[in-house]
Amino acid sequence: MKKNLTMEFDYEDVRSFRIGTLIVLEPKTDAIKTLFNFEESFGLMDWMDMIAKDNSIKGILFIGNEECFSNNVYSKYMSSITEQYIDPQQPRFVTEFVDKRKREIQINMLNNYIRKIIEFPKMVFIALTGCVVSPFFGISLVSDFRIASPNLVIHMNSKEYGLHPSGGVPLFLMKHIGLSKAQEILYSQRFIKVNDAKEMGLLNYLTSVDNYRNDVLSIAIEIINSTDVEYFFYTKKLVNHILLNEFNAYVDIESNMALH
Image (cartoon, rainbow, N blue to C red):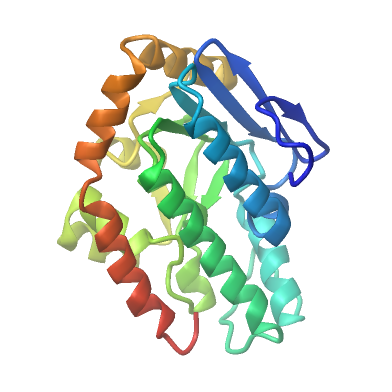
């Protein structure tokens, strides 16, 4: 990602293209290669800063694929920072990180993206399909619109590793559905089914079964074309006006935990 900074690009792991006033960001592989890579991650945030300054753009749409946020991908990452093989079908508690810095980078990168989305002056859409594990689910909860295919399964995998849910999940889940329901999910559920997530308001739209990508583009374009960039800017500012302070206070608590 830290190549020539342009609005539209096509790299090995991710691409971006423009449709009118909407910019689409689409990974070609798993998201960890970009999101948890120090240089790639800051390159992506620099790209978002460039988009933020362009008044001809009203929003960003991130289109996830079947594997980019999956437990298969995440378990490989956990194996790399514990130096122990972790079977995605039979996860186990993590008691030690061989390279704690990688885990700290993961937490910090997720939190940096969340801050960026909260402060971003344009609309942020995220589309999800397949399996999405809890750290990336947290990022989706802070976006402005969440669109999902009917095959989506939200995997609350953090408890399977004995680790707290990163990506701000406890905070944002509670803000969306209230304390009691958030506690129920965090403490007792392994999966959130797509229809349950839609009913609770964790998802805004579901696509058709066989037309995920085209439906996602159509929904985002329709919303983006419904009004002007100033409306999105000022309305988002009002909606999120205390969220950043709340999140920073949450991060202060998280940063003092012995085992991230």
